[in-house]
Length: 298
Image (tube, rainbow, N blue to C red; front, side, top):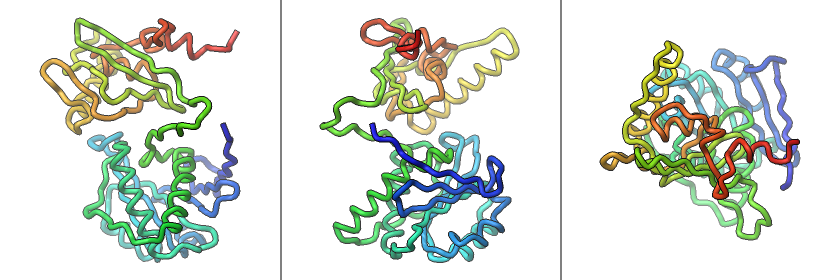
């Protein structure tokens, strides 16, 4: 596997402040920062370039708890003055530009269209875009350039904590070995649970087509357990509401891959109760996730 040299710079020297990110040899440049620093962001040279951008805000009712607006502009300063006045939901901004300013309005229009398309495909955020952007007509070579540019964004944005377009990419047929984990299974015949999952990067991915409980029915006795169960119950209901889990009788079917922070969280959503994911998720040979996780560790 080929590594990536990413340079992340904390402009103010503090986490959560204005941050820039670049990949060695890439013409792209990404700047992220909080809305409270918008004045300083708009004074930077990046704000004087053409580019695309994302506005992000926490929202309990949104997919993944995040609402997102994706746009492109030739004038960040005037556009963001307008957004500051008219859009209330966002508290973080990401500017995507080219260091050599070589892309035209058509390039950025294409990128905006692809970013929206990928955000819908990833289904990790709720889009606040009122209208669908139209992809600009580019030559075959220009489209190839922008797709290569997007490949780098798929790497840079998650490093900055932005997962709006993070999709699972299929491994090429020529790959010698897939970087993903084995497929783990979790079953419970009594409750018709037959779930599959993989560890992909830092996420435990519950896979499309998995069967999970149709109703999250767990109850806790201790106050802390009740709060935890209430959180899982609300998450399960939200996944049903947004169509990620389709209820068919007493079975829930996943309509897309759903990322979780741990195998225990994924197991809890699948089983309708708390789960020790390191023990309950199994490989085909009966090896537990915990054993697989500790492979090579003496």
